[in-house]
Length: 113
Length: 109
Image: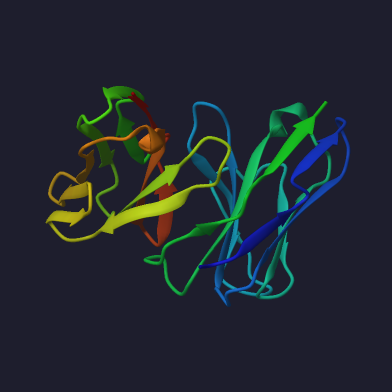
């Protein structure tokens, strides 16, 4: 089964702080995704990538940057964190094409005070 | 505008009963649907996918798809307390995947 890991698992920061969330997948998947999940909402896509060096904008990109440094590693950056970014963040990966199943990491719970 | 709508928001069924969950897309370009299950405190995992008209059965789970109305439904027969979870519908359209807000299913012993 696909393995997707995320770090840290929990993070608390203050308003205006700098946060980097990390995601690594070890199954040679081309596609990687960053989602946020809030109570009452499903998964909202922040950014995604087709491969190393590629970045695509999702549905809720404001306040977030992302970078795909290798096929395995995808990072989400919050440069000036705000309380509205308090959420549960999931990373996912999938094989070639958008017909493939997405495999999710365990999630990172971020709290911005 | 939400491209994937799920209903009901929450559902309570007795153990052994049938649970029926619905999902509709407002995007005519949608051509593929998935159902994911997310237990409390866990990450989503794919349950079933469907892209052809008709139904697909895997054990206690059956998925229906009507492509003309862009409506899919998930039916769980002989529901178990372990089926209690958030069920997310996802749809592919215009080379993008969209998730609905989910149906929270509670199976009461």
